Amino acid sequence: MSSNKNVVPEAKEALNRFKMEAASEVGVNLKQGYNGDLTSKQAGSVGGQMVKKMIKSYEESMK
Image 1 (tube, rainbow, N blue to C red):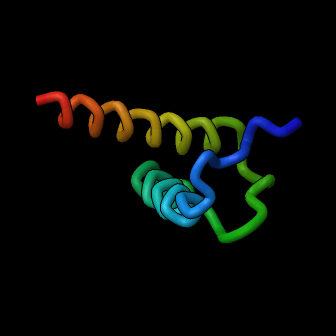
Image 2 (cartoon, rainbow, N blue to C red):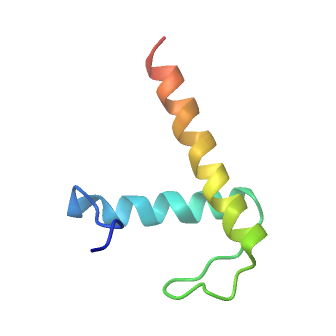
């Protein structure tokens, strides 16, 4: 059973745009489709940037 299912299938494209934006902010060149050639450090920096942006957005919404 996969835990990578989007709760809202329509959000998939928005999540992909968000991931590409986060990658460009940390200097990782993502391409459409397969990105299995990234190092763990690169993939982690993209994920970390995404989390930072989500937390910042949530904190701003609480003000």
